[in-house]
Image (cartoon, rainbow, N blue to C red; front, side, top):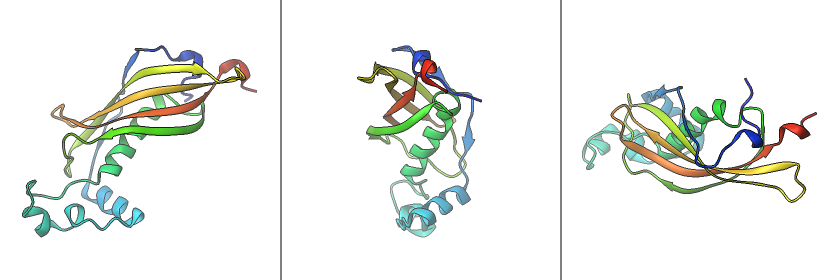
Amino acid sequence: MVGRYYEDYDEGETIEHEKRRTVSESDNQRFCDMTMNQQPLHLDGEFAEESQFGERLVNGLYTMSLAVGLTIPDTSDGTIVANLSYDDVEHPSPVFHGDTIRARSTVVEKRETSDGERGVVTIHVEAFNQDDDLVCEFDRTTLSLKREHVE
């Protein structure tokens, strides 16, 4: 399935992504292992029990990465040239093992490149848990293909 070309985005448009994902303990453990993040709040049950959260937290970068992944089929799947930036990342609420995450995207800005062959699109992404608590938000800026310039 192909995502959106530059022309398909409308500033101010909001996209509710249907795909969701329940985060498992294994997801969190593997992400921490792959990224060599040994923060005990993510991995050590006894340590986390003594924290203000009372249990292990899911790695915030995993949450952000998952939010990006949930948005790709409806935005940039096969139509992206590059991710240019991720800005203003916030984690207002924690994610725990067993939480189900969904995402919503709002097109903030779009502009053509100087050569007119591609476009830059900035999308504000919000991730929510099953209780509709906002768990992560950020701006993602991409360089997108224009339909007329695809071979």
